Length: 219
Image 1 (cartoon, one colour):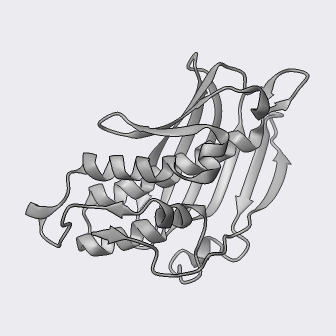
Image 2 (cartoon, helix red, strand yellow; image 1 turned 135 degrees about the vertical axis):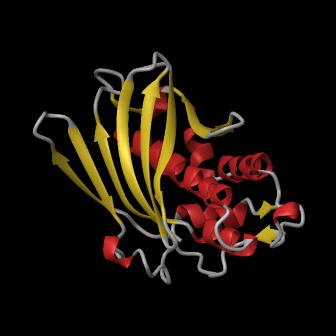
């Protein structure tokens, strides 16, 4: 079975970024979909972003995934195909980000590079790179959870996966982005019929927490 986005729309959503300053002095970034708010989660008729785009590029294929539990593809197969699709996303390739499945969960890995530095004076990773990692890992983990939860028919599950789009993203930068490598992970807090709420975090190679995020995804 090949799953592609049912809406043949090549355009991508543009995100509006509203930086603010928290009471503790740590930077906070809110990213909101320009056409959709939290109240629009129940209607994703216009939802379209980079997640659904890369699903078209790296089409998920499952071995005869029909509406029968006995014929469902193993979760590990779907996870590896999601990883493959994301790892072929041009923007993730450009940034050197790589998704990896460890048998249980999917994480996003990044090796530090000079061209990803935002603060040259102190050698700190650009905040946009951290936000991309958090958004991407949140999306792929939500996609896998849709399949893992096995709610509804298999075909409906893959339709949701192909339509998944970021509606709202909040990023808190807790420490300077220093390190030789960075790892982002995510946890689905709520999975509904029309959307998911996901919590993400990014640490460096020493395990220090660099940034956290909360995101809403619609499908």
